[in-house]
Image 1 (cartoon, chains in turn yellow, brown):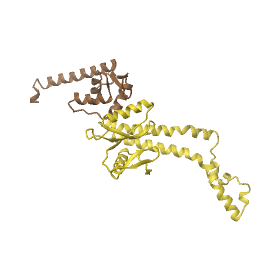
Image 2: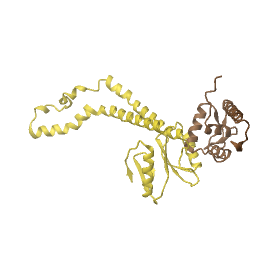
Image 3: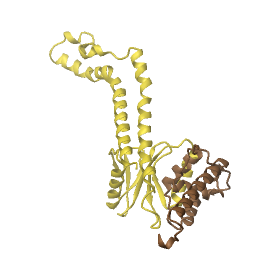
Image 4: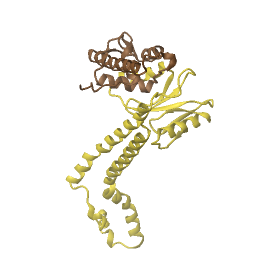
Length: 203
Length: 110
């Protein structure tokens, strides 16, 4: 089963995953939404860290440190950021952090990462603007986006057929670039919110 | 006198540096800190990973070759030893003046 959900507050995400496990859904993969497999319902303690790794060996060492101390790495990739752990032994503590500052640190890393991703789109936007690929005139004259010859002289069914056929292309032509600023803003909002969570949770 | 910018060390950092006078890998550090502190200080995996990363960056510890390829081992650097010694001196001074202020009364009466 696959589910799509978006969390910024990692504690809420942990709680949701715990509820899912109680209903018999075990998190299996996180690369495209949340992929669950059917399992025995259990009261699983699941904790999330946020980290990316430069080298494969660093990622391996990280997972082994957690596994040595009783936390199984259940989902997350070298570059995915979010890393999911499930408590395996009764002996280990209930959290993967033992002080408030390091617990808050994951939000700092999440915030920095969102900021970085947002800035990744900036060069693209600059290229589009300097190459004159963004035409704001179409906002007042959307007719300019339609290329069908003689479209505006047509009438009746012929007009509507040609018009509706071209509309998706015209829309794409005129507004596809909007994807970039929208992504930038979404990442900025997430960076801002994660930073607020960091400020709130640090000692 | 200007104090070293690393001082005072947190309890976690102090214990990690103290343990790393001998080489150890991550999980061994956790076990030894727990042992040395009479089970008072337990460092969780996420916290330890971040602490090791910081100490490496500040060059207070370094990683050394180990036989176990999957677990890196670490050891304190000369700079780390110096910082540990300075923090030890700082605490020794605090103990000394505290004893003076209490006027030599023994532990049981405090």
